Image (cartoon, rainbow, N blue to C red; front, side, top):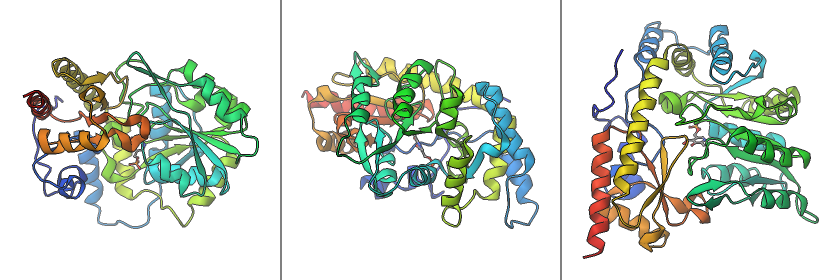
Length: 394
Ligand SMILES: Cc1ncc(COP(=O)(O)O)c(C=O)c1O
């Protein structure tokens, strides 16, 4: 089946965060929302069909993931990443964010420290601090328009802890939201070895791992037995297939001890996903690839369009993403501080994006734009930004 990604669908009055939450988030109603990470594309037909079919059976009682659902995850890992996982390694949660909180709580004690790499997806911060832990930041380096891990600083953060709280976990985001890097195997090995040699476990958030523009994805735990035993990998069909509202994620924890601790922490506190989440996950993994291929082609087209357009806008440049549909715009040459840039994008351009500074200080001067929308919407947002920037010169 051929999908029409150019089609503009009205999502208003569906209680979706992205469109119906704009007044609450941005304080005005006249902006184009390009913030929260979901897509303005209808989902793959087999997913809606599966949900309708399940809804027709009017029993919505307590539900567990069935063998066929679990098998669909095992097969997906093998088919997409050549990663052979055991069914019992999978723990289902209603989201990756709650899983990050659970992972940190299960790996640390209050007073410990957790390493992360700013600028990074900001819900990482409360996952650490609300667990009673301290954040240790290993800032990413921006070298010639390309972000890299700073291994020297990483090593230093682990080894210079005399008198400080112990660093029990490292959070990796791959692909990295918001800078769009897709860490390759060599980079993961370098970082992972430093963490593991220093006694830290790795929590690898790979929620965006099927939205890639170039390479194949390597799940952190698939690299070696040592990495497998020392990590928690967070995946989900939600970004890939636009299912965030169905709240289903797969947390893959090969090490039984780590898994038991995670599940013990989850028990009674964070529920399992609801039955429609399981239904959607299985339909997406088994029958969603035709849609996904077309969606990825369309997103690539959007990215190329954006890069061509932004070249014409003085003061803004694109950090080309290798993965995710979130684009990190470098607006530092506009010479505004974080708040001024926010006000400018809202009041003058009337485009609602995520402010770079919320991802950490090193994000100041950047904006994160969600390009998973029909191209005419993207075009209009870019036209508005271009006009607002050109008006600055007048
Ligand atoms: C890196 C990353 N992790 C997790 C999430 C959200 O996960 P969930 O909605 O499953 O809690 C997002 C959403 O944007 C994300 O970018």
